[in-house]
Length: 189
Image (tube, rainbow, N blue to C red; front, side):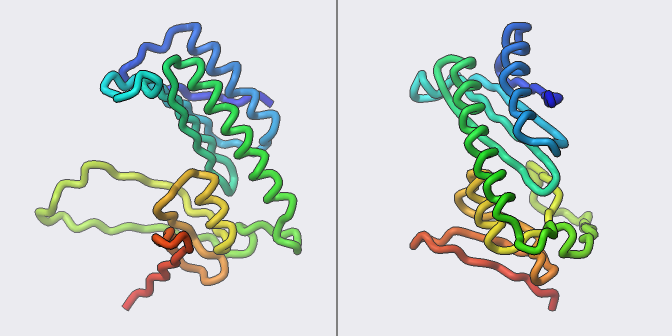
């Protein structure tokens, strides 16, 4: 199954050659994953990078049912950066598939275990500091071990927000200075 790949560029012109190359390389990842919802490739050129080998950046994000995979690689050539990002993504896909094979033991997915979570946000329109960026994402029910694995798959080093299927609440997993993990379990008071 070939993936539909969305390519976005910053400070870089996407030529037909680059477009074909990225589509050819990234769409092959669809062979390994059958439930992909969205595939995004961000290409950029950073002329202010200290090292010339870090100027071309390729970032691949794959969203599917119950997972998000992201890789980012830098090189002095955009084609090299894309190749390295695809190779890294293949390793992440392999880890994801191995994790799925181990499974939950009873055959149920995390989405089946937890009731659907309804997310609603209310905003106050008072004068406050300007919010420069807003990010939305879908919370997928998972347990703490799955959250640790997902945090590693995404390459997040500081924190990871997830819907805890065991407690039916939103939790924040974070890495402590000593290498262990901490878990924030908010309560409405």
